[in-house]
Amino acid sequence: MFLEHQGYSCRCATTGEQGLASFENFKADLVLIDRMLPDMDGASVCTKIRQTSDVPVLMLTGKVSSQDLVDGLEAGADEYIKKPFSHVELMARIKAHLRRTKVSTQTNTIKAVGSYQIDAKAKQISFAKHKLKLTKTEYDLLYKLLSYPECVFTREQLFTAVFNYNSDSSDRTVDVHLHNVKRKISAISQSHHGITAIYGVGYKLSLE
Image 1 (cartoon, rainbow, N blue to C red):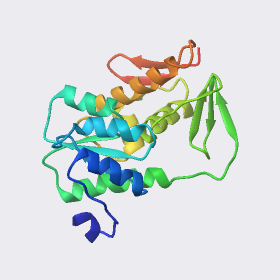
Image 2 (image 1 turned 180 degrees about the vertical axis):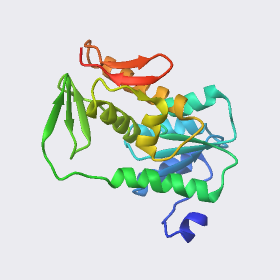
Image 3 (image 1 turned 90 degrees about the vertical axis):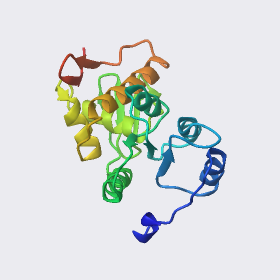
């Protein structure tokens, strides 16, 4: 009701199966999933969505453990929002994610950075000539690192650059998303990805 009052067209479901069926029939720009559903775990719903779509996914949960956060992000969620939260906070995060999906560029130039190739218009990054199947958040984090090779970013800087706001879970969120990126690269190539963790600080993209 709150989202519709803000002018958004919404589809609601009370179970995971209903949600997946609705997702297949409704071209959603963003998905909100509760972690606890009566028929299946919200993370399982997210995993199924990620098989066919990179649409932003926000997972809402009353669970607060670090492992719950990791599980949700590894399932493909872009962000993990802990209850209780205000409608104003949720709307700010929704708008931030929707802005990210609508940003485009007019250039067709494909930029090479080491073993990576960036097609900014198509929002596609390849590694060793293999296209990476990245979520929007994974793409944005990797793109930020590739834009400034050898530059060290704190986790907070990376999170803020991608989401445009601060979060108490910024450190773990960045860690999990970049872990997913490295895992996807390792699955297609034996070459080193160059994503280097700087102990106690953050990350950089090394071209060595």
